[in-house]
Image (cartoon, rainbow, N blue to C red; front, side, top):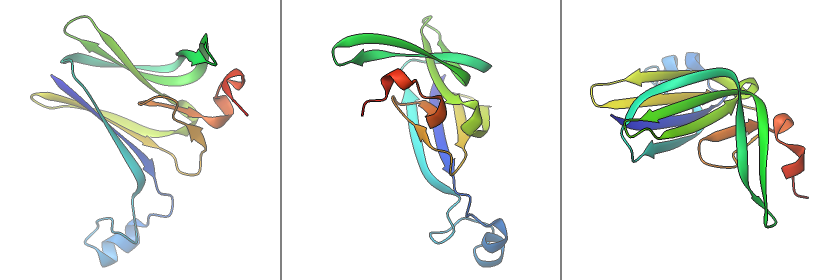
Length: 142
């Protein structure tokens, strides 16, 4: 199955009452439900999405020419397993997560992640959202 992920940052100023009264219950330009949305998809066909709560995510890369691996705890990890044995992970710090849902359609798996508004976070790589307070201090470059 194809896989798509939608990540939304909620807008705390959204008023459902206003939307009901003035716009048939729908969000509008002056009353946005989301501040922004990211959409990601995978090239490989996905067999399933496994949700790992209260888990860790290893942030790996290179900083100033030196490789690093930093474990970030308190994460919810969305693990997509491909038919070819591949594993792709997306993750979000539980403290900034409002809600999520996985929808399985006939030919597509859709992951929707809703991030709280007014909670500072970093997005170091596509599909990974880490609360600022939980971001590895060693990786903060001043």
